[in-house]
Length: 208
Ligand SMILES: [Zn+2]
Image 1: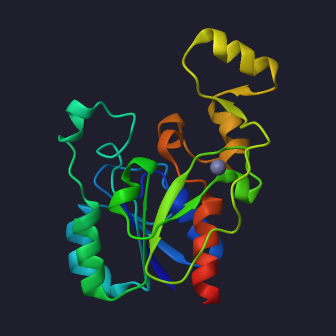
Image 2: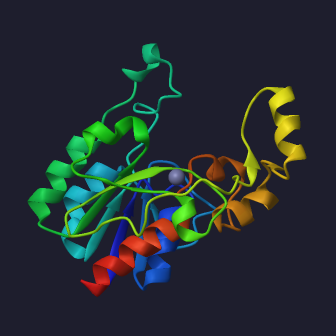
């Protein structure tokens, strides 16, 4: 089965679907030399409109800066809110799809499920929200009894405290263990989806 991976970045989502058994084509507006599958640099909305019918499943991770709670309110208006544009196009295509985003965009998504690293034995608690047009629920509730592996806090004092508890600095090497990703650079790891999340979505879809 062929999967179209829109706004693919460095391929966290794509890898998960590939592990579930899909052939992947990635689309991104920016060059993505770290992307581990066939890739076309293009506008995702336009590519979907012209070629979406050629695929069996479509995944989209529209840029989240416009929705992220980390983006200062004054800047949010500068980002296009692509979720509804993409959904309209996907509904027209009548294909199975998944739209992913951050907690700040939860209200823009229709009945999303939340996935967390703790559901997959990963030492990250990166919460991501997935709107699917097929039946799916999270594999479990999330459980934060184990500390995440990586220290992401800014203040030096709180970082030192977390290092003493066994947490690690946020480096590419440590991210391999936290996210299950070993091919990205630091930039890609910042916003990545751990492949375990989309592997679960792909497998759920295939098992019907
Ligand atoms: Zn969680």
